[in-house]
Length: 223
Image (cartoon, rainbow, N blue to C red; front, top):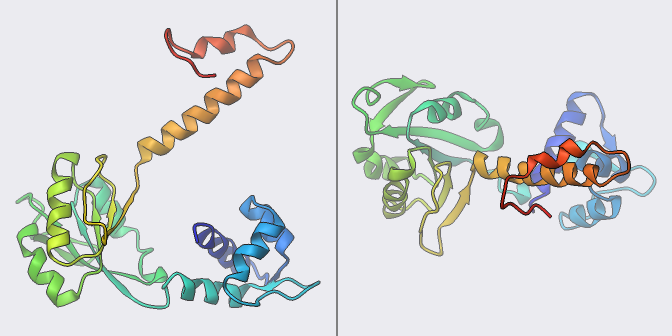
């Protein structure tokens, strides 16, 4: 399932460029997996490919949408209208993927009552009533870390069953609530790890510059 959105994005870009049929080998190269992996992943969606021809991009995109539930509309709300909340609200990419942004919440008197992305910013105290009216299914947390758990608790009490957390804090929610994290600092740390490993490998090659080893701090072990 994790690779399906990747395939979907690649296929959508190919369709926009005028490519209607895609062989598994080409899709594999673009997705950085093997052709066998592509065929196995897409086989779960049904018999889609044609031997010697490949996949009809539009058909596969449609089947992926169905598998991911993107053929439905999911009402969502953003809680926390700081810089990140503003950016997400104004991104405009939700509707094209089946996600309908219906409400925005904050507690700052300077923000509550303003409009962002043509939606009013409501006080978080209104979340329960709005959730009932709009049947919210997804809550996006973009608050400071100190507020994130309280917001998550409120979303759960309001019946929101899926939470996407951007706040740099581990949250506790009931087992039946889907919780996903988006943490740029963690992603950067992962990149730092691989970059350090790459530099270490380079330093062990013949004629490599000894200065590359100076990246490790005293007491660190990057082996």
